[in-house]
Length: 152
Image 1 (tube, rainbow, N blue to C red):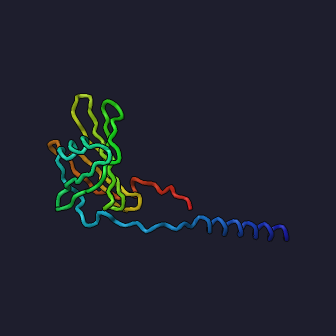
Image 2: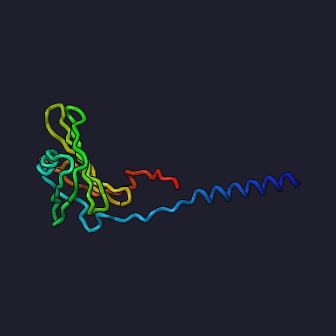
């Protein structure tokens, strides 16, 4: 009987310790783009201009409704003969990143893809191709894209 009670006491102690370590302080995330629409239409010329910028260049990307994404180009790399990527950081949006990639397809047509994201935000935007060669920024929830890998 004493062995059973000691075993149960140890099991209870282990479980309470595990529960204590599993609780994490999660930073409160905010919606950076709460005041902006779910969809913002863009002309592909905006992306063409971004692809010509050098590292360190300041940029202001008009996104409609009087909103402008302002930032500094962190990198502009041609990774393969058919892929060029530009990363922009915006201090105005809590150091959010706008990553844009230009893809040259097999038929020599150009496609753009990318996202505006912040690890501490609940929302972001993703570049999607719209009709007639134009593009749109579609708002999304970051929880469906980013996994929480933090360990405190």
